[in-house]
Image (cartoon, rainbow, N blue to C red; front, side, top):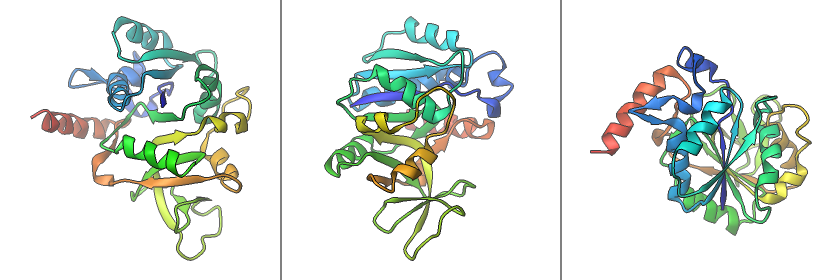
Length: 235
């Protein structure tokens, strides 16, 4: 399995911390979000990671080159144009081997999701995309059938009996077959609408995890929570 860390975002929710640095280099207890994400992927045996960059991209590249990593890390350069999640994944696809699944991980997500189990389920079920989800309050709920297949967004599609409302957790595994099915990265576009369209003909399913052990660190109020989590886990 290979890895892709989405680290190109502007980090507007974390201003003023991101006025002079990218979100990926914001620190929690002296450790950057990017370093945490890289170590998370390395911990499940991933030895090739692609990181996309845009906002203060030079600083991210310098940081990566300044450290020794277990994984080989390549850069998907979006400094000239931020491509959003879909365009970013499409552009990065040329850097992958093309024959291994790719774990896609937002740089600002902290969780104890069992990534190894997610990978095993993904491969066993021959999914095109496996989306990590949980029951959380969010304005962007996704709808899944009773057997876990993606149906669409809440409020945009009819919800048959047994439909479940779940929130995407910023972590997924994609088959390399997905890359040829995505639009060209000539302009920015989000990936979730692509998944919804592809779900009509391909296996795009959910892996549900415990929301109590998941945190979006892209907001100032959750940075403090993340600090306490990390301190507790190190005791």
